[in-house]
Amino acid sequence: MKVALPPLPVLSLSSDLTCCASNASAAGSSTSSAKGTLASTGSAAAARVVLFDPSLDVALLWTPDLRARALHFASSDPARGSVGAALGYPGGGPLTIVPAAVTGEYRATGRDIYDEARVDRDILELRAQIDRGDSGGPLILQDGTIGGLVFAEARSDPEVGYALTPTSVAVRIAPAIGRHEVVATGDCLR
Image (cartoon, rainbow, N blue to C red; front, top):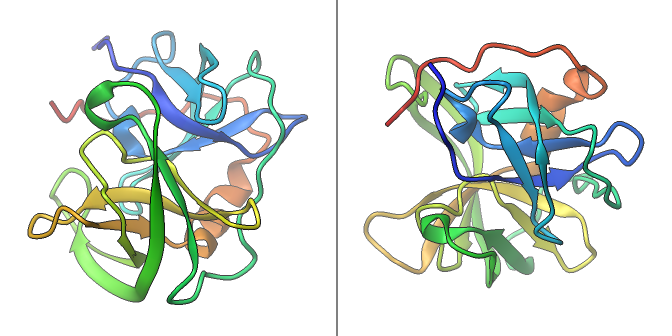
């Protein structure tokens, strides 16, 4: 099935391989229609999904035509009180940057993106106005590192959101950096 998706928010992780991370909003995309939009510049380029993990809710995209300075994941998970900014495209609109602070780190039990399996994720609770469409965007810490990958807004408080920890995402995507082979993205969620 070929579906039209809005550009996926991505982070440049490697200047030589130009690999980019996004959340699993890539589900149901075809390799020819997937696009990545670099959060820092708004530049868009065709992308190939080279890793798709519906349990962690992470995808890795290879974008050979997107050139950008590489960002790096924080070497450890940010502590409570760490501050930065969350970047995203709420409602599929323009890039929005909102202040964010880490209020806690938890091991959370939830469901995979297809609601088929129970999964555990290491997450950060953020004090930030995270909205639908921000999923897949980065939490950038004051030192310029990726402090997490935003994946959800709280249903009960508009000033609370959640991000996957940088260490859990980095460990999961590391084996796929440098891949160019396309992987299946599963069924469309809409």
